[in-house]
Image (cartoon, rainbow, N blue to C red; front, side, top):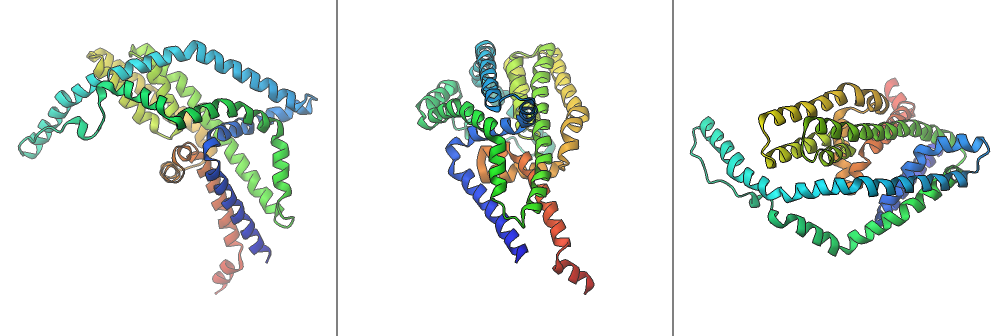
Length: 354
């Protein structure tokens, strides 16, 4: 009966979690950001609290400091970033012309020479991208401006993220204790063991992933500026941020570099320097940054990471993609616990005896 109660509790816990995740979809972004921030900074808060500093005061000061830093970033840095992104958007028509008039014919000619077949009619790029690239920027901005849901989401993110962050930071330990008080007494030991394992794995993964992204958001713009790539800051920042999805920085960075080089009619020297810069960051990331910061903590096989991104992205959309690595880490801990429970079960041992 005890084992059945434990199974019922864990299944109910999982179902409630999924239901809440789906039900609060409109505020899931601010909640995720707020919880992750409070979760990662909680050890520092506990240390300061043990020194006699009021936790509510620490939380308030932290929110004020983060708000000031955000304001400074928006005021000083974002105009430059947005200006470079806007310049990239205006060059979409030139990129489209290059694809249609230069790249596609060369590829078709190469295929024709290899296969010995005649060269077929060139496909129009609008067969693949059914939008008017000449007016893409205006169309995108007008649709965003007319989207009530987008505006509401932006306002919710702006208003509720600092609010949720303050309450999570202030009451993190209270929430933790209240959840543990709901666990049945006889199941509490194994539940505590499970939470401690998840906490250890999750904290390491989140810290590692955040640190890797910050390092790449510094390295990519730096090396692209040194290489002389136009719009280096925008390309570098977008490439680094895309690392939120594992391995996506390789695809995004390659495409953005190709896009900028094509639309600026880059010479062979610039192409070589940008390629070497991008390759240098990839080698540095693959050999040192990720293995030392994230790899040793997550212990996740690359194939499991890719599978997690695909599955969680399909189930939960954009936020599922962002949470793929943390959820995979939690899943690994859960699977190890289930496997150990199975091997200790009467069913498994009787099977061996039989």
